[in-house]
Length: 254
Image 1: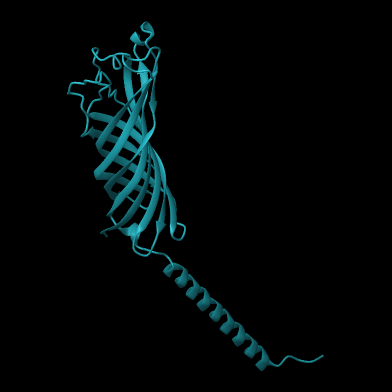
Image 2: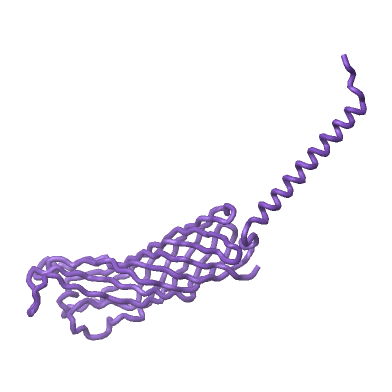
């Protein structure tokens, strides 16, 4: 049986040591390359940052009838129909930790349109249609305050959920004016809740975040006027909105 020379064993041991060191160096290099592949790697260390919002919204009123609706037969039904417009704004994001954020919108301008459709039993004088419609256009300054929960970051991707409250002021409301068309008027202010989900995509210089959010108004925004034919059959109007937004986030201080 051939004997193994001590020099050969030493050579084999040196080879193994060199191989292990080479593997560790390669692993370290690969880890560094993986880390370097992260865009904006220090973003989560920032105390706060800002962003801009561009989006599309669709909204309508949830309608509750008064008892007078059952006492008359000229208006068979009234429905709130969806209509779409755009919105834009500026967001401010405060990072409490790697999971939780607080969000405020110092500028959030929402252009919206809500439609009413009345089904009539008899056409109005001089008309033949049994359908009467009304469009209520709004330019809303909205001030949401939200809490956001973020997932772990997976390379350059992250998912998050959010929930919060909001105060709305309608710049285009005509609740205090006369209504020659005998239709519905709405109040200027509203208070509501909202919730949504979004995704963060980290690019080299900016974070792009598509987001969908549902908003529900809590106040009755109907400016009741018993002298208006189409208004006195409505008890409550509550706004509902779905918002699709594209947010561009970045900047801020450490």
